[in-house]
Image 1: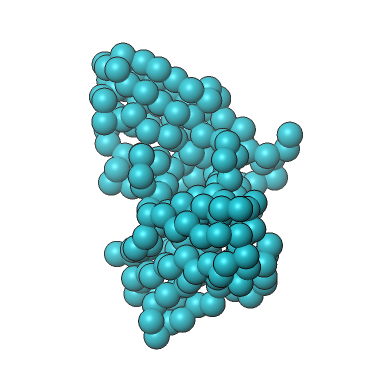
Image 2: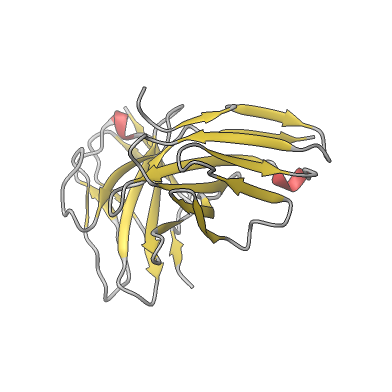
Length: 112
Length: 109
């Protein structure tokens, strides 16, 4: 499968724990996006990378959230001290410039 | 700030009936609009974008700047059209997407 992949697909954690998600974009895509989707809502933008540079962060991305794309390929999204409000589907998308964004299957996070 | 509004949560029609999924937007710049679709147990995927002016799977959408709308239409719905549909607006130098809340289309046999 040459599409965007995300790992894990599901994560259940206890409040206060740290979690990390991984996204592998389509190989030739230099743009990478993270979105969050809660029940009954459309995806909401979290952050954007162009190659390894993080160029934009949403106000939704609190200090507990950090994202990296160290070599301009895969990206990680870490949430520290998780809260129940962090429960959501976390989506990754990648694109080449001016082209459509291709989405991964998402990581569903449940914080107990 | 940009905003996308999909006023309805659910549309249920019989096979062969016409479909119109509504989308309105608010954006100060020149809008670039998309419809994304998510079939059951599948990932979000692009259905169509306004600049291509294509018909995909029988669906069309016309950008109406006067009414700030981008409604999705299909003259004869098929059961396989049943899915979640999201309208989205591309904005900013980084081309981020702003999505509506989505609408569930259910096509009954």
